[in-house]
Image (cartoon, rainbow, N blue to C red; front, side, top):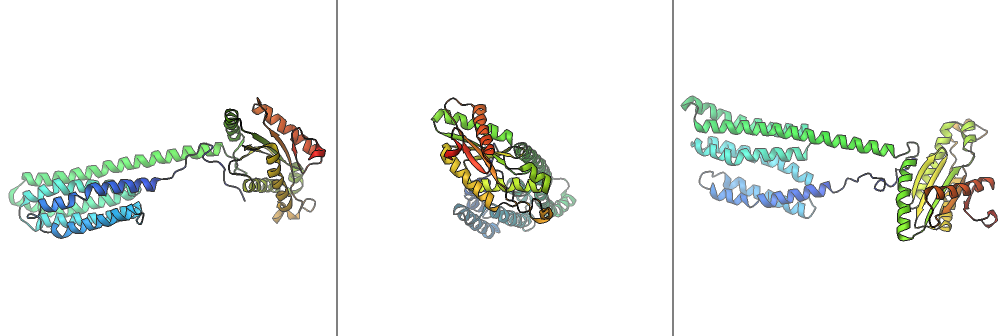
Length: 385
């Protein structure tokens, strides 16, 4: 099992959280601002549009339910958007039909379309592009514009045949053109937004790949180096302990030679997974190169680090047998446990990265010279371990 890359926040990857909460806040604000205008419209249009006496109270009830649901987290912003995109088109189409065909005054109809329904179509388009991918948003918003034009055009054509190109007819046509252009512009902006988001995701993905070892999923040498520099600075600033460990898979070349490179890769992944499981989230684990892994343990003394790494060594020795499966046919190496040699060095006052690494490497060399399969702390004799 390959461990997930550790420390995504530490190594500069942004964590995308809170978008749903942001959309919920925007929806609450929009509903809170628009809801008071509903009874105002009913009051102003009471005599001219009798249908509003039924439809707009229903709209107000829907807005109230959405507002309370969003406020109490019983409705998600996505659900609220879907309800709005389903309810408002029907409401506006019914209202448009009513003002165009249920009363004879075209001037009043043009006024309602210009002042209320036309801007409403644009608002609906904005919601569609916020809630949906650009192409789906275009289908919803564009489809609504076409439906509105299908309602308007018969009345416009009838009026033109009767009196010619009047001011009211021109006004209605202008609203149709304006809303169509607005939907097209919104589509262009939504497409641009998606392209920018895609490019950003690609850039972030490339940055992650550049800092991640592809075999183990751990941070690579570059990422560990940068994080170690930061932790050294924190250690200097606060006077807290910092320990570094270099981990080497014993006889790794022999594993590769006798069982194949797939077995060696399996061993590395298994060790990386064990280390990721047993060590703390605050510890930085990375692949230093070849069969060497590196661990940076902030706020940790050498003795505490050695105890933690001994647990890793014991579990790896007891459980990791990477030579199973298809490569088990290689009898000379099949079933052999993976063991580790570990060199540990605690930072001394004034140590830079190179000095600390040199001391950990020296401890690792002593672990190998002492018979491998052990943890050696810099400055401690083998007999004391």
